[in-house]
Image 1 (spheres, rainbow, N blue to C red):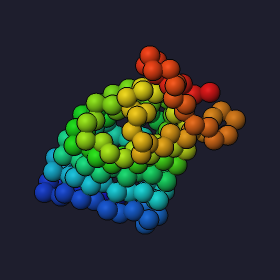
Image 2 (cartoon, rainbow, N blue to C red):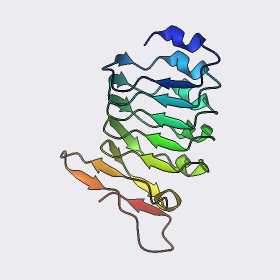
Image 3 (tube, one colour):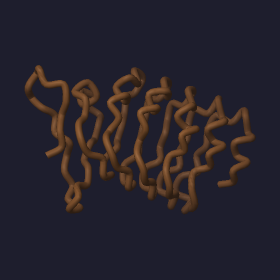
Image 4 (cartoon, helix red, strand yellow):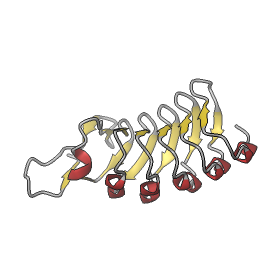
Length: 159
């Protein structure tokens, strides 16, 4: 995708999934303040999610699953106040799942499975029954981030 795509100021939807797109995500997409849907799943996109994407406050649907994305999901994801659907499964992302995800009050569906996320998951986030948090551990084995059944526990941990 060309970096000039960010010049299309009125664009509300980018749906270029399953096209074998390669390269990295254009940083300029973060300039599209009216963008509601970004669907680039089942491509060959690599690299990290540009920090500019966390400024897409009108974004409702973010589908970047089944690519070759690396790096972390940053805590600034909480800026995506309109987000309803987040799909990042089957990439190579790692690090802590941001606790700030639970601030996304419009979030209805999230699938971050089959990455290499680790650490703790807030119980409030884990309450969303549409979440799938299957991760690949250091040995390449699929495991699920467990939620503690102790009602006083604030976090779930990977085991």
